Length: 246
Image (cartoon, rainbow, N blue to C red; front, side):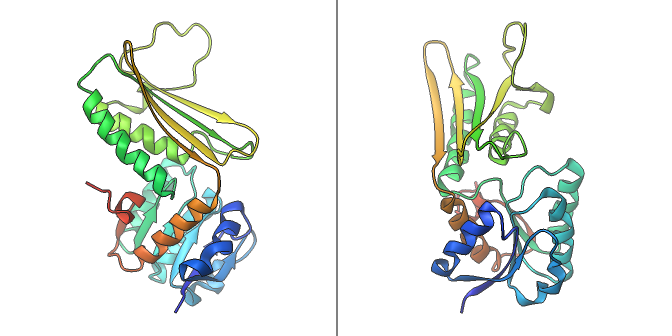
């Protein structure tokens, strides 16, 4: 029997990608939801709610999912801190997989970044930078994936948000030793490129993932949907889905 999905953002790029491959993954979009539709009309006809819509839609959809005990997969990014906090609070009532990126390769990049940061933190001469590029229509910056990479680096180095430099302009002076650089590039139809760069004296390490087909994210989201229906209430990442969590 197919896993029945309520797909919010069904008409968007990711929604269309999910719809195009869901049958091959043992799933079916039983309730497609797009701008102007009422998800409450079909919430009882699904097993899992998947959200790839707009940030304004995620919190009301999470509340609806909690009211009807429907597990949730969230791929939407760009939420405010208050919105994030309220969604996290709802995870005490239902299992939620929330990820800025659902590809297997990107989540391996997260894992490798954690390992590299742990080793290189003992070396004060390695500077860390995160560079990402997406298509010209992307609305938020940095990307959810870049945000996660920055969180990994900040946690590893014990840094605060204000110690991340989002781009540089003018006479900035010498680079502070503790600073992490973040750079968002936009143009064309780039699906998603992410690089974590550790620059030392006389050597440089670069960890890079490049996505060329949006179907890799769709496949990951469907994998998360099949995983989350068996999970206990709580907030999970793709690291949990893939068994990479420490």
